[in-house]
Length: 346
Image (cartoon, rainbow, N blue to C red; front, side):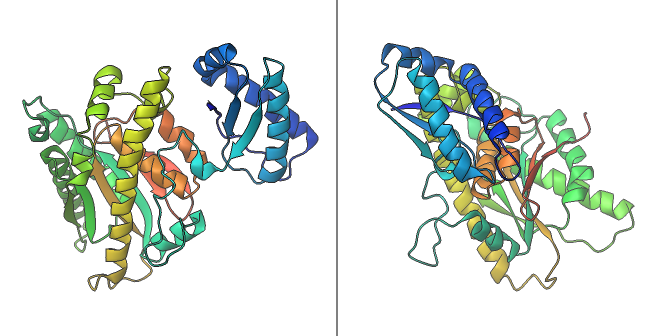
């Protein structure tokens, strides 16, 4: 089975014949840009089945039909194929979102729809989730023991005094990798935020308690993940998931997908605790769930939530961004969009 990857194309309503034509042309350009390795492979094995995936659009039914017809024609001109099928966005191979990642634990039926996921967060008072990478670290013989440098501490304090203020108020707990570098980043960010609020004469504020999650660190310690990181390094997630080496791309999808699924489970647990907490008297106040974790893995968790919520406009944004130290992403659950969390440069 050959898999071709395409970025999302939106028509913004009903699909006209002209729009479908533009859609076809954009698909052909995307195929040339993003699937050169797959095309070279398929040229040697022309008689095969092909799996095509797209992101959803308002006119998905009509576009899907046009998509299949157009791409069958385009590919058959280059050697033919035996079968062609279109996958729903929840099975998009570019996204580290296993099909059972968003299980409704309160019932026996399958994964939740995006609207149900959104409701789960909003009913808990969580309107935003902020994914924050730890600050700059010093080397250590044992990875877990890496600690922040003075630059990393400065970055963390700058984050708290800048975008941290915009994210306030917070949930009762903040999710944090148990690695010391993430814990220190979180504490410095929150303390800096508190100092800034005091300077602004805001005497009443509440900071979250850190909920240390071993799996947010342990999930990064996978042999295949370590191998890929040594080979590719700090880079946008797309560099991992669309690597020219198809074996590396598949390994990245599995490793990051497992981490993303685990992260989503942790986030769902946080919504349940927030909803049932007796320490939340301010019903109706929009709150932010903080999530502190590690490079490469952090954006995979953000990507998973964005995909689960169908925040399709933010998916390419996360895929193409190289996450800086003490920066990250904010997913607005209510508005269904993704923004970058940027601190002042230190």
